Image 1: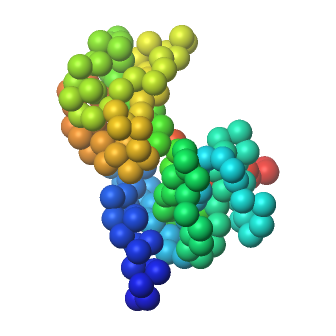
Image 2: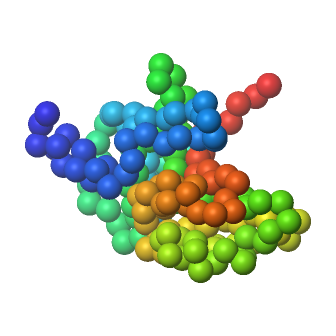
Image 3: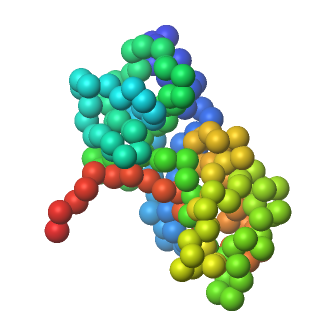
Length: 167
């Protein structure tokens, strides 16, 4: 592994190598070598493979070439084994607690696990959108297992952006 590849790999060491989506028998996504996501403005104009404009995220092949601008971050890109469908973590998690409970009543436990409630959907009191307390994408993904183990948590999923599929 070259020095540049080693530096990029080290940048992604804080991210989980794999993300489990769902419960038992869940979908497993792994870091996709040779790809990265640039989060934040300014977005590059050339060599973009996928662009998520509202979220200000660009997916690129290779390795980052320039220093990051203030407010930018880089994350790995994930894919299911044998698939070329890329998935980009946003740093946002979707939580659902047991029916009859309210997500906001779990605030202290969520904060203890390293996350904060970013928003509560009006139509679903048992749900919440979370972010890592640090604001870092890697930390949000690192919270997944801790959050799954909390009493009352039914499900926790990272928000992943993918190419739009037409049916």
